[in-house]
Amino acid sequence: MNHNLSFLHRWEIGADPRGTTLLLLHGTGGTEHDLVDLGRTLFSGANLLSPRGQVNENGMARYFRRLAEGVFDLEDLHARTAGLAKFVTEASEAYGFDPTKVVAVGFSNGANIAASLLLSGTNTLAGAVLLHPMVPFEPETLPVLKGVPVFVGAGRTDPMVPIPLTERLVELLTAGGATVETHWQPGGHRLTREEVEAATVWIQKGERPWN
Ligand code: MLT
Image 1 (cartoon, helix red, strand yellow):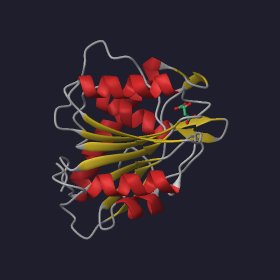
Image 2 (image 1 turned 90 degrees about the vertical axis):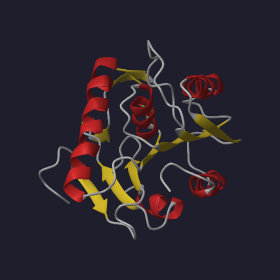
Image 3 (image 1 turned 90 degrees about the horizontal axis):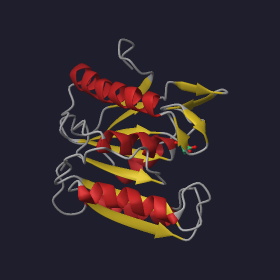
Image 4 (image 1 turned 60 degrees about the horizontal axis):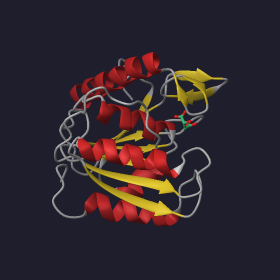
């Protein structure tokens, strides 16, 4: 890893260094190592860029502050979303990957900051795999997301993310022009094998901006 970049992170160069880069974003209490195997499963041969969240919540790393479960510190969220976008640019310069072929893969808190990147119109992501996301914030103006494919994995009995919240996120992304595929499973706030398989098929199928 390059110590001059703004996030502690793990970087793994792929089979085609100018090809797709997965931006791996862990859940609350995770590390930069958590989603590496998932990234390899979803897209073997992709570059992997995995930053560790910089907020410390009682010893647990997160990407932005929250006031309570599901209640976010919006000022902090916006500042850290911009900080993460800047990190991706810095990393593309340091490692030489193509900044137009970055696909986020985020779980829970990581999915929320990835959704925030999309809703903020940072243009950081060519696509995203959002696993158990919420609505990070309600944008005042819709971002332009035309041509951005997004996979949303959600659980019908997720105690942290009620169904209408997932539906609202899908609505916002779609209204911005993103092409959203939602994968519902009966379970709660955790990854399932079926969901990972569906995301793997999704990420590699057809014409993708990152292929
Ligand atoms: C969040 O704070 O982003 C959500 O509550 C999910 C999580 O706890 O990671």
